[in-house]
Length: 169
Image 1 (tube, rainbow, N blue to C red):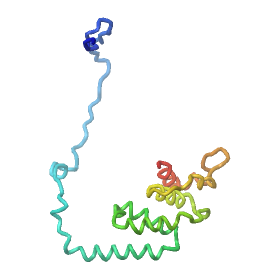
Image 2: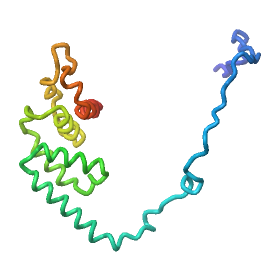
Image 3: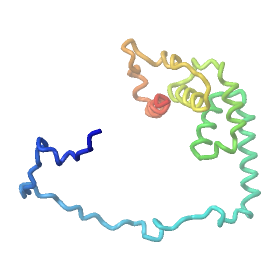
Image 4: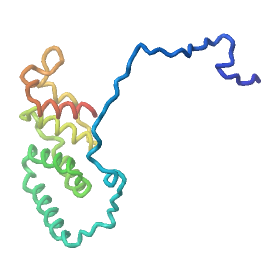
């Protein structure tokens, strides 16, 4: 067994020059002070300290209205996909897991040929996020001969952002 010798102790290791040069002057950033005071950055909000008892009936009413939207859009997959995406972006997806899963399962065999790039990307991303197997070949209608998006779809900013998010999966 050989003893472990530090790298600097080896005779063949070159020593770096410790000379300092003043050729480069570093500019200082005189940034204004933060608008967030120390109180905001160090305070913690305890969720258990918030009293929602007076708002609870309104919260329940809004949850029911949103649940009704799922039923209204049962035969409108484009609206369902947009609704599901909005619910998840608001961070409320956990409240409607059953409805979301049921809606996405009912859309698995849906004909998506009439969808635009944005709706197709939302459909693809949501299905994949919820563990459903969807082939990426559904995007072939948007691709040119060279395999890139056709020029007409590049100007669709919302579609391109949705396509990018879908491609991340």
